[in-house]
Image (tube, rainbow, N blue to C red; front, side):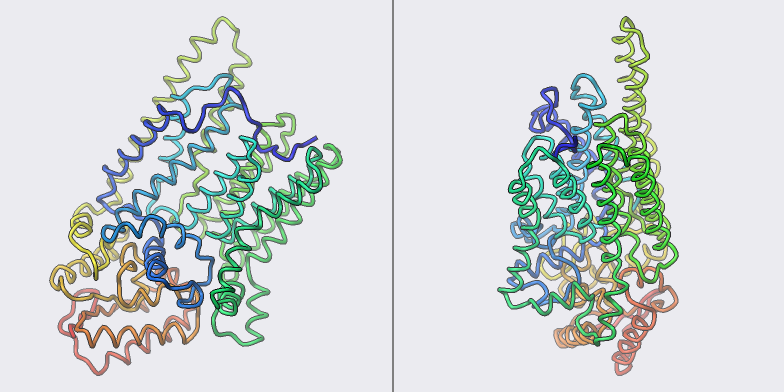
Length: 570
């Protein structure tokens, strides 16, 4: 029988999360990474977008009503809880918060797994494992999207609560993860399926847990409805646009990737439920079917990149697979389930990398820790009792050596991709109020040169608002926080409608009348790759809007030109 909280059973041998030694070691690790690399950029992906959104919410604006956004605004709401205290230095604050979130999620996974992989709790081992996983989570640049990190932290915290028999709090936290990214919906479905498949809870208790899991989304929708943004929310989030015809709505719904993946996850949950109900009789059938189903979803996504946001699929698939790995840790005889989970992880990583997106999936670190610890457990079982103590000493030594190896590799990688000559730290400390803060750091030389131009203009005109056009540049880390054009544009980045472009020109007129500075990109069409990724628009929609911007500036002569921009000083 599979109990409803099968994810992880509580253990008297487990190390408590609030252990003061563990907290001190964790904060030390975060501080070292922040002070070593924080001043060189190290921004979270799309962090400028969420900073701009948080600023709007703090100013009293209602999501979906006062600004367009095609996703839940959970990240914007979450980060207003502390950003309202900081009038300056939002970019640096976001870097520190992001590092704290990444380490916390890895720590929670390692804490949950350590009991099933080692006979005795060990603070040193947990800290080293968490640090190794943390470093792996940061191996690429830029770091994954901030709202993805928010969702993973809440989903992980929810599973951790399950391990402590706090089922209601656990399912609420997992439900909250959907508010940050809709791709966590299959994860909630999987958890609720497991709860309903268990026999240790009454029907009323299961219904209550399901209600608590859906409560965060329900409250969010009620808030939007009461505030008068219900119709806007329906068009923006469900159909992905604020201005679509009826035929376009049905077409958009048919190709909506979340819809198809939820269907696939539901089918996978049914297979798992059948396997549980039959007490393993369907094990040999359900696991391969689950594997084939998810393989088919990923293959379809890879063949239809214009229809499916593969990053969304991979994030859900990764959490799904890691949960299967956790199940394997409990039911060690069900190796097929573990292989299916491992396959999910591998497929998720492959799908993510195939997009060319610079995300490193968070769970790769704990995954390495799991396999390393499982190997140690296997070796322990074959080790004579008299050699156990020396063996434990050697395994800790090897673990420390492995950790330092990751530190060295990480430092080498970081020193090669970061442009140390960009004074983003000094700029962040000196700017406040009307300017965006640090522009961030990119690995592409052309991007770095463009950012240098932007920073140079900000120094040259410290009392003027500096806007970068087309407004996609506001999505670059830090720029969207205060950029007067991007502030109105970044919330409409996935809406191929005239409404978004009209708002850009309204803001542009304000900028011109107030004596601001505009930088017009000279290579927008030729270098379409990263702009298109930022906007999530078709080439036709993107170039059409760019033509309108060019027509706007025909009546003005540029003050001067750099290698990448035409500069207009109004």
